Length: 148
Image 1 (cartoon, rainbow, N blue to C red):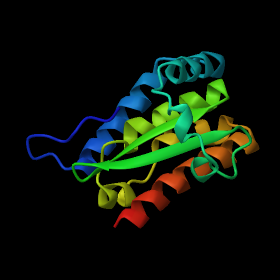
Image 2 (spheres, rainbow, N blue to C red; image 1 turned 180 degrees about the horizontal axis):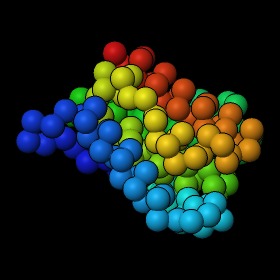
Image 3 (cartoon, one colour; image 1 turned 120 degrees about the vertical axis):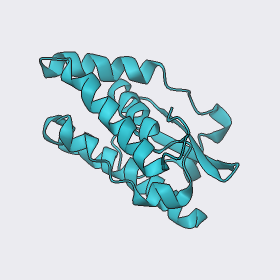
Image 4 (cartoon, rainbow, N blue to C red; image 1 turned 30 degrees about the vertical axis):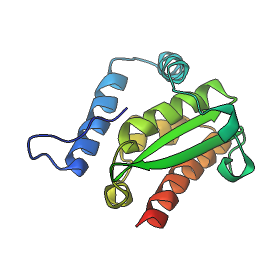
């Protein structure tokens, strides 16, 4: 999960730092087989959305896999939880959460997920997974926009 900004660091800088950390982590892997294993491992550690919140209203349209995303506001920041039935997608959600979770709606609306291209996900995801990733990011931004 993303850490709160501290010592005058803005949350957009903190989001950039989270993205830089992701890029650095992925730089340790020589090939995409290892990167996919890492993504799957990240997904295993994802805090799962409670079964009661796996509703049609929280289901993200546009994902080949079933993905649910719920948000709540806590102390002025949006907290997200998600669940999916696909291992790689769970890892993608875990990466997204590191960048977006625990930020204000205004901050979320300003964050561009540049890590996706920087680590090569854009070129290595299947078209259906890429569409799903876009749908997840769009839902997060939509929730933030609605909260403003």
